[in-house]
Image (tube, rainbow, N blue to C red):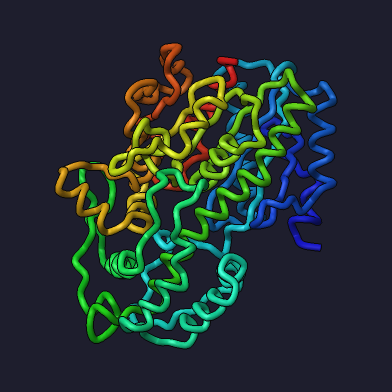
Length: 439
């Protein structure tokens, strides 16, 4: 039995006054299957017990092991209770939230922009978790791709062309994508890998707070010419697309049914969703799943690693709406989403996900940010109506009321979020409490 299965039944959040509040951690496999059915049954029983005033479900992002997820949830929920009592003056005898944390396997899919740059001549090694994703999705083609990556110190044009053909289905647009562009061509995949190779140099950040592409040189690419790439470059880019897919699958296959069952168990208890980074994709995928027909009360996206156009009426360069626009109908309150110019991790997000031809079209049009820039980097884009842009007030001061037509509140959080992981502070807790108080 795994560490998650052994520990998942019940843990707790120790508050500043020494009191202990139950915290349920519900783990899922990468395919969305719950791995602790007893814990799932127990949290549903707790929801049905008429003990709790609210249900809060939080999902972590990438590169988060079991202990890190537990620490994230305990710190955030402790902050929430501290602010509720000391700032909001809430009575904890009536404010009794059922606390839930989602755990999904992301630790081996470390986001490339959070790692130190790989040495350009380092050998490529596909870790077992990524290899499982590739093999499960691609079968024998995936096995062939893994062999190519693990047995070559440098990849020339012929190897890159073969890899692009073998891995192309991983780069294919699907219902889990937030911008729904057409699939990448083989040449586009190779060009994308060359763009990723260029990230191993110092970055410049523009006034929108996202990274500017550096010119590719033979030294960056790690070989004699810019057609010789380190296998690590391919692994880094492919892992991002696999991670996107995994977060969406966990949300739509695993978390959505959990939310639906919680709603059935406690039909009159408001449900609040919180997601950090790729955990926001988990929550948005859950909200848009066909299996979830009921509304939740609120959703708070903290530095979300999804497209800034995910809620758009029409995505730039496409005739389609943002892939998560359906989520706006599944949340009673407007969705709140933070963005910060200090989030250098998300500043590189778009480079891993957009096609070179999209870069050219958008550059000619003079448009910035582009559809692949992160929501947590620049805020929501492409909404013709229903968007409210706010600055966070001083702690304890209420956020301004929004119009009844508002569906997204984008919070310009430069002053309160100092980096990608800075989401367990009193100001983020205050945002959630503001949503709770508006039930």
